[in-house]
Length: 301
Image 1 (cartoon, rainbow, N blue to C red):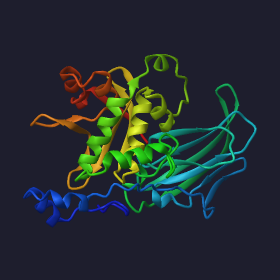
Image 2: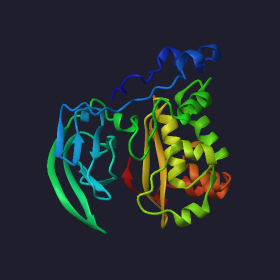
Image 3: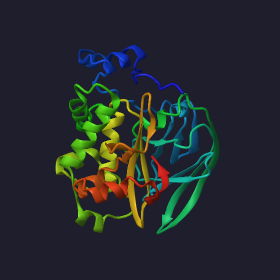
């Protein structure tokens, strides 16, 4: 399965050269300049009706754009793809479109729009279908979206380029960025105890405060890696009985890696920024997060 531009492919000759001990080639195989994919609402294919619109013009790129301009407190776009998982995205009134990912891949999507009436009551605004044929399965995990917002001017993008500078492979860039996050961001227990439903991370705020909850850790790491053209999935579900967020990445010549960073000789330890930081990478924590049975995935973003 090809990775779309601008992701760099590593030629076999360069891999062999590195394996034979030619570090001078390292800078040639992994540029660290930001490669930010910018979503657009081009108006060529629009579902719904005022005050809730879903621009599906670029669905082949792995996203749709949604905008709510009504007077209610919020609206909801529900996307149900071929995996039959219903994703609900809450939208406050805004003049701007928000990117929503098509993480179920290619296939038929139900696109439903609702407007908040009061409390937890919603009125149906529209129901549509959308046939999606992705240009690449990696695209939903390269673009920003409502859960992982960033653009070329986001400070986390510049920091990712700085952290990845000099890395001789995507995996080395992943480890540097991961290490930066777990070494510099402290878990915010008070925020975790008081956060309300509908909370969305702001990656630069996490950088400014150097604190966050699991969602903040995962969103910041995901934004930094995606800006380095490394496909990254932000995954939400349960770690034991705790609602939690973690990430998986795609590395050339390796594939999707759910367990990585700490290599013990018999497997990769799951890359979970929150637990690794909060547990100071202790042996017990690493053993726990290395066991995939402790994780129950619900949503991908």
